[in-house]
Length: 144
Length: 157
Image 1 (cartoon, helix red, strand yellow):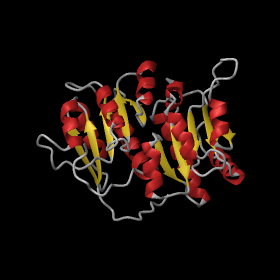
Image 2 (cartoon, rainbow over the protein chains, first blue to last red):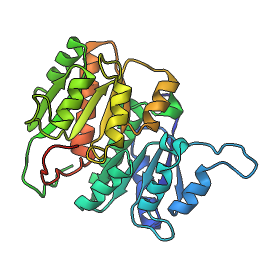
Image 3 (cartoon, one colour):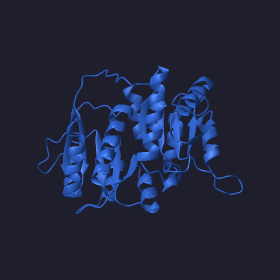
Image 4 (tube, rainbow over the protein chains, first blue to last red):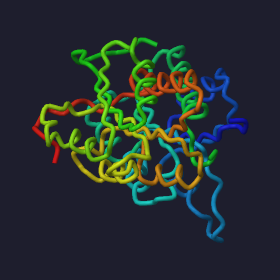
């Protein structure tokens, strides 16, 4: 895909946001990264504006699970009921390895569940693989 | 990146639902070298549903960890099979990667709305198809985490 990939990161921890910015900057996939600090802010960002005009769509969402206000699970539940939002692939990106988190994320139609590695080198490699798969292998509706 | 296996290693079971024998062979070739991976193939939608429900001669079928689904199938269509998978509580967790020859935006949109986990356009060149199948299995098995195997509670219904 030639056009840059628009990635929306939903993450409340500023350190983790910075880490993702750094990791993606080392990845060869042209991209723009936007950040929302919780699920509610992301829903407001993704839904139609008050004047009815559609909001610009990210190509991919990276979603943390544990956040204040509206967490990742609640975000997924809200998205599940909205066919427009189901069209945007959501990758859950979390430090959790719990079976219950993996299962509930897939049940709520997360497109994939990825456990965040602690080591920065591994984290960058994970970011590279996610960005690579969703820009070069899978086709997303926004790039169709 | 090192894999952090916390549970006993077991084979990853992939169900390929594909009616085109050439594509089946290429998929087999693509993952032939992968360790701990078993490919099961069903060539029409009804047979795939029997596999998933473990019935009509497929009582011993394993629960797949990943489904690769062609959209154009004889019998039950891939689009209908996708709906069936993603509306059945016993199967909804299983990631479904749609493999399709179609680049039509409508088809792609519809697949994601029906909760396909990813949509892949099958390239015509054999080498490229093999590379894509490898990339798909490597993303789902090495980068992402597949849903853990449930305590086997008998056939999905």
